[in-house]
Image: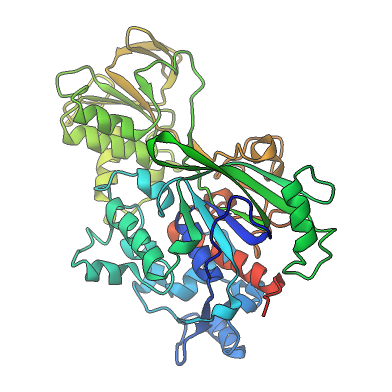
Length: 487
């Protein structure tokens, strides 16, 4: 159901979704009347879940008790809703491969909930910013969305997976095609930047809000004079750098912004110098413009995660000398490389091998690569030097061409009061997907501290595409159970 996009709508939208990555796309699909049922004759390999599914096969999954269905499920996510939806879409994916989904989908327009999806870029979210040739960490078929498997899109494009994994470019094109194929485009507003989300109610200063309270009798049948809405303001980017402001009102807001907006900083001296960067795209640009090459001083890469590993692989491919520094020891069990199967991720295993075997003095089999485990950055100097402290506390100084600090990223919730910290599990600390996600109800994904405000994806502690969809299911189920759909 298309809702359009007006600068000052005369009635409140039931739902505004901020973020158009996989979470936002999946939620839009579920709110557009596409309804999941258990497929006739389908048998789930989990006998306990199969018995529960047999109890009410005529009732859509979104109208069933998600807590009851997910009880006892185990897997690679801590979210019961994520495990449930993943198990229904990809039964026993971790063991038997690509078994068919036990779900069938029916389009029931009468149950659609009007909504709008706001995104800074075209549909795809953070995938718009990832270099196209890079391969995904997850298996390609785990990147798919409901009712249109990724393998079907690849077959349609006559393309093949690379070691069961897909390129970022293929994933982005698949998501954009999904929005078009499922006829969701009318609900998406690309180029929209949200600058504020606030609660408004009776007596609000905005005359537009007052008009809405008078006219909108509500999807929940509440007294419009007592209703409190969210006011979502921002602007839409137009050509030639122009902007068009908007202000819309919503009964519910879903945060699906991901965590890639704000790269983490070390907080050391000189980190703001022009040769110090915080995104891998800076290395890609430097390679293209030949600012760095095999005869320049080394590129310093700081971090021990997969993005840092991607940077090492990129530099190694172009024979660019690299100094790779990280705080952990190579054998630390928490290091991501010690958790990845070697067979599935040979290129990351190669980086781990380089980190382990190459000494700080360049001795080892990998020419042009220096590993600095258990080193901390003290600061950067104007003359393109970086000062380190090793595990014995001894200082070391290296000349570099540029530095890439790739130690993770944090969500940007600047459009919320206190940057959203009041919604976090620990309200005294900044929001962090890994260390301090938003505090949500595990079966509705509604924020505990703010009713009507939901969070999905990394903001709620779900990182992988196969699991963020469970958050979309939980939100859709909550909204469909509580909204009063008009005739």
